[in-house]
Amino acid sequence: MPILFEHVTAVTMDRVNPVIPNAFVAVEGAKIVSVGTERPAGNFDRRIDGAGKVLMPGFVNAHTHVPMTLFRGYGGGCDLQHWLNDYIFPAEAKLDERCVAAGAALGLAEMIASGTTCVADMYMKTETVAKTVLESGISANLSCGAVYFGSPEDFSPEKCDDCENHIRLYENWHGAGDGQILVDASIHAEYTSCPPAWRWVAEFAQRHGLRTHVHVSETRSEHEKCVEKYGETPAQMLDKYGVWANGGIAAHCVYLSGGDAELFAKRGVTAVHNPVSNLKLMSGVAPLFFLRERGMNVALGTDGVASNNSHNMFEEMKMAALTQNWNFGEDHGQLSAADLLSMATVNGAKALGRDAGVIAPGKTADLILVDFTMENLFPCHDAMENLVYSAAPSNVVMNMARGKIIYENGQFLTLDLEKIRAEIENYALPHIFG
Image 1: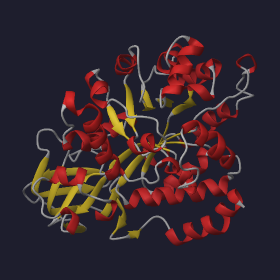
Image 2: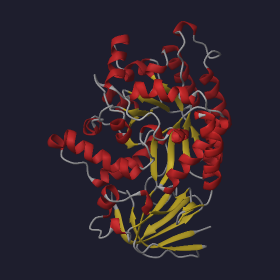
Image 3: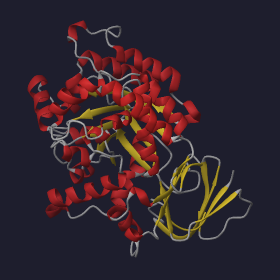
Image 4: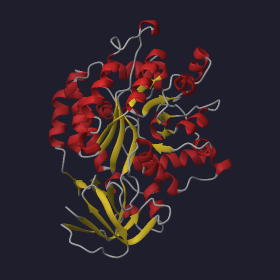
């Protein structure tokens, strides 16, 4: 079904032509086939009038825990460790497949309506998440976040359920939906596992050519306790066991030290900045200028809704900009709007190994349409500035994932929101919270 966007302002994220007014963008199948200021030849099954609207690459939310939408606002007012141990871990122990499916569906609906087309998600019961992702239409890199609290001396793949989870997830879901779903290897964090588990995950990743997804140095306490325990930072310890051999995602990176950033740059590891979550949990602010100067790719994520409390990537861009201004602006100036949009789109796509994040021929047609006639986006002197500092999820009027329109003018075309609400109200919440 060929589709043509006409007379639209295209924010392409292409460095040569970053903004093209009055553009024509043609899509066929899952790919963008042409971009320019002249109408392309040929017939189109649908022509979309983009006058007064901005077409941009869909957001890549590069670090999420989608089913945690069920815990929105639960356990607020705590730092990371109290939040995890006193609220989240006990609640998660009650989750079953049905709860995870409902939470994942709600989270995906929220993301779709606010302009996300691709995610990197780490969570338990991951095959259930995969089924829901496939139905939703967006793309996802999925991982199960290996956890092992037993004695290192007693570790074996048979005693760590997440080893079997890795195997099953990879065999059943890697490449599903013609590449809509990709599987990453994953360790939840240094402090929730141990060296034998790291070695197993690293060898699994290397055997199958997978990237890894890990929480790294989210808090000062986490970082310093690792140094005290092992004599090296979390990044360095995981590297000793081969975890970063194929690159991947280091979520948070608030407290890197001792050459961590240089190590990550060398290994092709992306730092995923989660500014709202980090501030809510009092974890700190990642030094983005420093990470970029050391050669790291930097992307953006929302983290889980339980620590955010939304999947709003517009908010993440703005918060990233403001916190960097406050903490590092005197020495470095400001991140540009183009920098921030890149973190939310093309940089995230690079982190996930996706050929998306740019409006250019041959790229995956992950696109969103933003209504710039709405009061909060008018007048517009600079489209990128408005997207970073003024736009909101309510301005998204269309979401196209892999060339298929999955949301338009407030209507979900792949998910049944009323059914999702009923499942959460009548089953998931009573099951978890009584």
